[in-house]
Image (cartoon, helix red, strand yellow):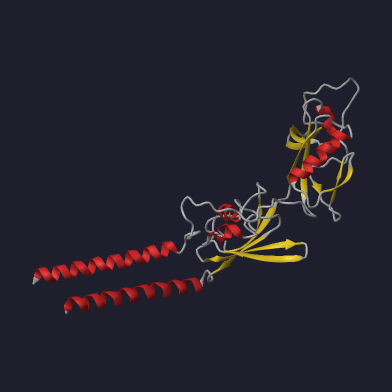
Length: 307
C-alpha cells in the first residue's frame, strides 16, 4: 500500500516537472528568430540590387595615383591635422593645421607651392539636379549610379582628358544612415546610456550592403515586448513612401525588398504590449494561465491514480 502511494507521488512529481519544463521551453521558443529555417539549406536574397545614389546624399571621393601623386592634389581636400601650443598665459590650445597634400614625401620644384582646388571637398553633396561639382570636371550627374559606377566614370574622364595617366578613384557614402524607432534594444535605458549612443534614433552604417538582421544585431536586438512578426521598414521611393513589413520569425524575410537596407530607411519595431502597466498585466495573465493549467493537469492526474 505504501509502495503504491510512493509510486503515485513520484509519478505526480515527474509529470509536474515535465509540464513546467514544457512551459519553460515554450517561453524560450517564442523568442527565437527564423524558426522555419533548415540547417545547411541555402536561402537566396531576392532583392540585392545594390545602393544607388540619390539626391541629398553626401559622397567622399578620393583620387590617387602611383606615378604622379602630386597631380591628384587639385582633386582631394586638404588633410586636417592638429597641433598643440601654449598661449602667453600658459594655457594649452589645440588648433587644426591644413596639409596641402596627403603625399608629404613628394618633392616639388623650387618655388612651386601646390594647393588643393577650392572645389575639392571632404564630402560632395548631391544637389537637387542629381549632380556634384567636381574639380576641373565641373557638374557631374551621379543619381541612379552605384558607388563603383561613379568611381569608374570619374577615373575614365580623368584619364581621357589627360589629367592623370593612372588615376584611381574611390567613392564612399559619407552619410549612409537609417533611423530607428520603437522596440529596439538601443532604446532601452537599462542596457545603454546616452554616452554610448548619443543619437539613439540615428544609426550610421559602415557597409552599404547591411541587411535588416545585421542592423537589428548592431542595435541590440529587439526588446522583450517587441512584436517579432511586425518589423516595419519605411522607405522613400520616387513616387512617395512605401512601408515594407518583415517577420523575423520567418525565413520569408530574405525575399523582402527591404531585407537589404537603403540610405535613410526608417526601421520601426512594433510593440506587442506596453512596457509598464500593460506588460505587468500581460505577465500576470500568462503566469496565472500557466498555474491554472498546471493545477488542472495535476488534479486530473491525482484523480486518475485514485481510481
